[in-house]
Image (tube, rainbow, N blue to C red; front, side, top):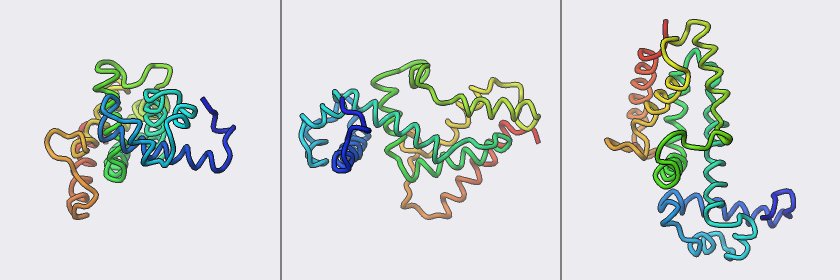
Length: 198
């Protein structure tokens, strides 16, 4: 596989087109249903180039999936866990902006890791979140009666209540902003009542 540092500006642009096309393809069809032909046609490239950059369709999925996890970490960091309710709202907003990210995670769960952690232990990125929650528990602002991992898992689940993977209602960025504000406030109140000590 070709490393990003080995690419020219044109090569990086081609690689980026492949990543964007693959993100759309995998978020719609999953790993098994995604077609390399469609990805390369959308990215205006060819299979040989895709395989030289990523190795295989599965490795391409891994690349975009890990990028999606990093994006959520960057765009919606937990920050100060003394108000994890705001973190839940930032996650809600990110799912509205990029519904493909949550779909990728769902395909990974369905096709790769049906039980246990979503990613292998060596690739998990939740140390910072868990440390922030544990610090908030130690300071008394977040309930100490629950394991930090379970608090994190519940807050993430609550933030996904209206996400593209909801089995009740999937919100859209096209909806009236007043609806989003109503949901944000309900989410904020619910998380505070569930986990905040004050």
